[in-house]
Length: 112
Image 1 (cartoon, one colour):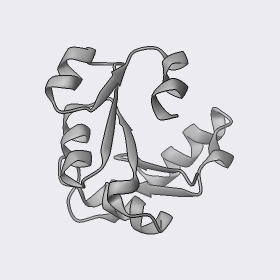
Image 2 (cartoon, one colour):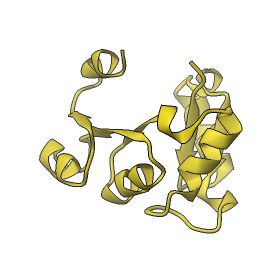
Image 3 (cartoon, helix red, strand yellow):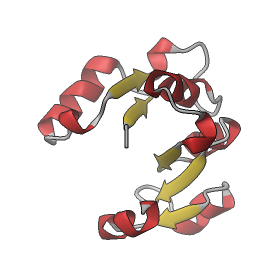
């Protein structure tokens, strides 16, 4: 399954962070909000990622930890998985996340 990172940070910072975490090789596409006219909560960034992946937005799932990010993914017509890192699962669910999780070991069961 092709995967992308769509982040509000600059491309260099995204690539550096993924490299430091040994995750860079897992992503075919990296998109920065610096590449689109409107950032989150507008859907532009997620739509760019889907386009570069060659995947229809409705076939995409987004992992998000912010309310504006959830709003952006929903506006793009994507499935949203809310990761409770800085907000509670309840806040993310109230924002519209289709599913939420707070610990990484729950992630595989959600996406499978």
